[in-house]
Length: 308
Image (cartoon, rainbow, N blue to C red):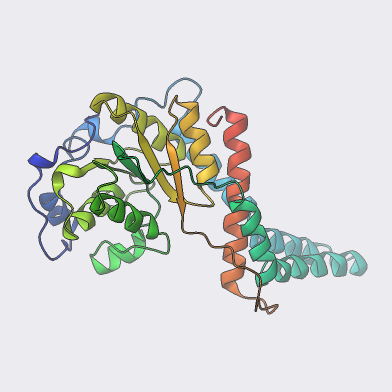
């Protein structure tokens, strides 16, 4: 797989972001090999011994569902329905199902979980250093919204890209590596790295500073591909930018492939607890679910040997 895009080879991105995959690729052709080539579509070569991408992706989706409080509630309520011949058991199961749903939907618990999850995200950023590259991990493009609008729609994690933009404009990094591909692509979908590259170019970052890696689909592959690109370009001082909740697992994955980058966690979500509402909210349930999945991901990656 061809690594990174040489900015000199990428034409300027139009002032208006492209509205379709073909137009987008004309605007940002570089990054990861020809679109039609097998080399551009195959999993990263670093995903080798002991790592089976397809199996890992399927298992991750199953775990995602099993680790959601809403799933627990549904299972408990289903068990209650199946136990209706034994009213006392059915009542206990139904009560537990509702209690789980309510507990993880209140803001105080969501805040507490987020504080715990983000506690290990410590910045090792050195403002006096000019980094060879700032590595931005994907996970901030809203794919369904992008398909509907034809634009590169960013979600609540867009601070990752904004912080990289600020570092580049301030001269604290010579280049940016945008790492992120497509997990379950549909026809016309554009890899996240290309979406982000076009956005940075639109904001005025010279194409010569933008490198894309669009083969990775999870944090393990982010690390593998970053190591490959860094070795090929002779980068030594790297700064990883990702959400605070995601940072501990990301840094563990980078260490596992032999990299020791600095860390700049952003996008902190834990509040100070003041004024928190005890009324159940869907947003609080989503926050709790995200933390539980991330904590489980750390355990799974460690057991699989993908994190150190």
